[in-house]
Length: 189
View 1 (cartoon, rainbow, N blue to C red):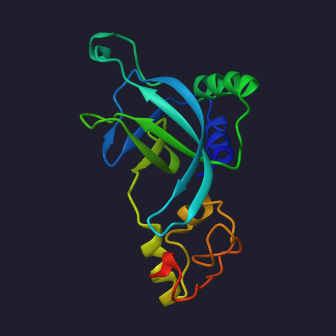
View 2 (view 1 turned 60 degrees about the vertical axis):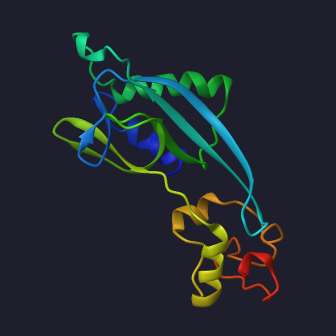
């Protein structure tokens, strides 16, 4: 989900408590939006192709003693967006970048999560998170060249803004059409 869609969904329900969860375990009460990050990536995959993309990351922190603090619950969607609006004045966010959440959910260590969906449930605005995954872009390009498919999932293809020249003739172009490289290309062997 891009930053604009995420913030629009939050603004539609400013009074509702905002709860983040992955699977059936909600994030502990009393989290704090501790940081908003504009993150730019420049990478090279194992097939020697470069990739460039940006993300907006929202870091959540749950104080270790939150269970002992009465009255600390999830912040409202309005309070969450008010913090983001304050950040946006000093550090303008790109509405088109992917929005992700960095948090420690339950007993799990801190990790990046994709935002899968937002919906109202029992008087709360739930943000459904899915864990990040590792991937091999070179292998995905190889499969795409054999099947005529494109670049793994639509979400990952949309997040990757490498140009066709950067992709050395492998993977997909910006219209999500397969670009098959010559057999000698490093990314398709």
